[in-house]
Length: 359
Image (tube, rainbow, N blue to C red; front, side):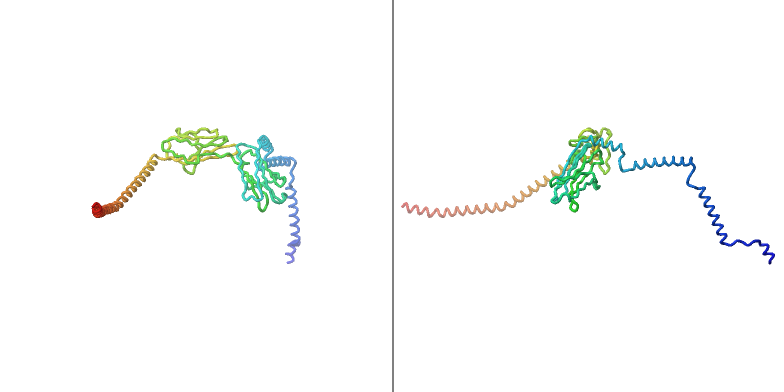
């Protein structure tokens, strides 16, 4: 046994000593790895990364400017230049604290212009206690209006540079908080006057549909036709069936030849302005020649029935009157006979009396 123990050599180290050696080796390896994977690079690599990073930041800057809600400087200058050259229109609304219904005013704009909207409000209490707000549609407008007081009236003013269709719509001024008084300005393009009553014509005929814009001049007109829910633009003549005139005037005409039942329906005349679009309606009814003939036959039949009824009524009344007339004639004849007999009897005594008197 002692020989075997001598062959084993020196005594093996203990477990804590092994753990300490392992932790020391692990620490040296980590320090070596961190030193080799340091975040700093050599000077050429740093310059290359800085160049790439500067390019990326510039591209990101361009994207953020494009998506920003503010208009770029050149566009702002262009809008300011356009608005400074536009004519100024002023419109006002007056309200009191006892107004029961909102006050509205329609403003027709054909071309770009500066519009000044003024609301006047006369409260019964203190002017300084009245809250004033403005809205475009449902959006609250902030710091885009003026408020001042003169005497017992409160004034608020909002100016709009109407350059395109984005500035069109409804602008409302509000006075008060609990019981608000509201005045609304509706900015619209001109209305198109079509034809209120249906236009009636017959198969095979020609017809002219007309739309007109009073005191305005649209940039362009477009006609749409169809007898269903889908409206089809009418632009190119088809076998000379459609002829459009006055496309750049204050009125437009659509001539339709060789009418058929398929041409019946509602036609739209669409006008384009600088600030928006508007349209009118014309309803076309195409009838067959048999339709008025049927109406005439129906009327004639009603007249014949009426005349026949009158004749039958006359014949019935005549028959009813005839027996009564015969009875009256018989009574009259008997009365005459009775009168004659009474006259003869009365004449005898008179004759005798006359003879005695003569003697």
